[in-house]
Structures are given as C-alpha cells and as structure tokens.
Image 1 (cartoon, rainbow, N blue to C red):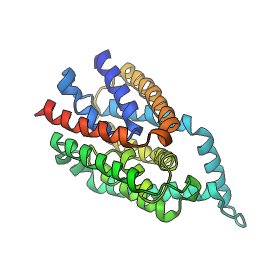
Image 2 (spheres, rainbow, N blue to C red; image 1 turned 90 degrees about the vertical axis):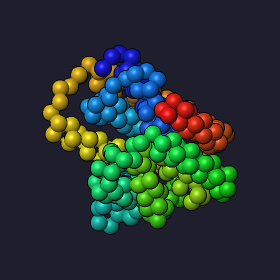
Image 3 (cartoon, one colour; image 1 turned 60 degrees about the horizontal axis):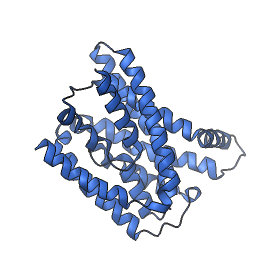
Image 4 (tube, rainbow, N blue to C red; image 1 turned 90 degrees about the horizontal axis):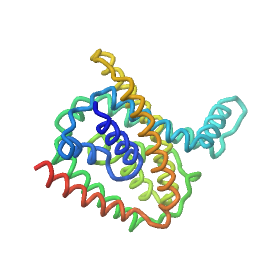
Length: 266
C-alpha cells in the first residue's frame, strides 16, 4: 500500500466509523477516485483497531465505571444500579448482531456489497434518520435505557450488516424513535460499538490467519494511529454539537453521497 492510500483510507474510516454517514459509502469511492487496489483484510483489522482505541479512550471513565458496577452487581446481595444496568444493556444489545453476523457473513461479504445497494441504503436510512430526528420526542437520558430498549437498538445493528446503512446511523435512529435525546442515543451507540467492533474484528482476524497473506506492518501501524486520531476527533466534535445542530446535516450529506456514488461508479 502507498502512503497516500494508507492516509486516505485510515482517516476516512476513522471519521466515518462513528458519524451516522456510512463508512462503506465513502470507502467504495476510493478505488474510483484514487485508483486504489483492495487494501486487504489486515488493513481492515488495523483501522478498526484504531477506531476501537479511540472510543475506548474517549469513554474510558464510562467504561471503567460501567465495568466495575456490572461486576460488582454479580456479587450476591449487591443490587443493580444505573451503571450496572447499562452494562447489561450493552451486552444484550450486542448479542443479536453477533449471531446475525455469523449466520449472514457470506451474504454480507458478497452480493450486498454492490455499489447500487450501498447508494440505496445510504439514502433510505439517511431519510429514516431524519424522520426520527424530526418526529421523536427525545426526552429520555442514557440512564433510562431499559433492556427492552437495548434489545431493539442492538437488533437494529443487524440492518447495518448491509453496507451503506451505517451502524451508528441505524442505532441512533432507533434510539431516537425510543425517545432518547440526541446525546443519549449517540452515547449509547458509541458504547455499543465497543463489543461490536471487537466481535467483527475477531471474525476478520480469523479469516486473515486462515489466508496467511504477508503483512505490511508499517502500513498497519500508521493505519491504527491515523484512524484512531480521526475517530477520536469525530466522536468529540459530534457529541459536543449534536444536541444543537441535530441530525439533518448528516441526512442531507447522505443524500448527496448516495447520488455521488451512483454518478461516480456508474
């Protein structure tokens, strides 16, 4: 991989992993705009590791607090509190997509990666995000998420197995429909991404080990660093401004992106 390819793909992946705008919709354009060859499984793992490190770094206090509360609640005689319930919500929310990912892996990596599918899902689920932001009540905080809410939000991640849907976008959409504030829906989406990215990266790593392909460690290291920095900045800026600006700037962006994909690829 060239330095330009590493730079572009890592930064694009980092910026789009957590914003509700579809990373697949951007990455599919790279070969057409820059003439890049396929980056390979190893680089995919690297940039996802960078994204994972970013969300863990940003939410390090939340993760530590939730983890302590969850393990503490397992002790006999200890009751549940808001943090331990949130820990259970993250676990419950992760299970559906893990099961679906294992069952649908070949389909997702094959037919559903067609550019027209990505363009269509980018537009359709962008409009759904806008509708949710417009019509939802947006009254509940993250501490009010129930296990039922977590199951609904987690199950919606199955739709994100279809490229172009955007995992963050569909989970935020579902959270908004359930009455969460923009900030609460976003924070839970980001927290839910931690075990989801871990599971998907583990799956890709198994494929990588089976393939036994040579590894460009310098490119991988640079990919981890660049995607991690980009993802951290994306999370920080997004959470700082989302309650004020709302989801519609991202909806409009997705509509334009969908049209651009069709124009460039076809």
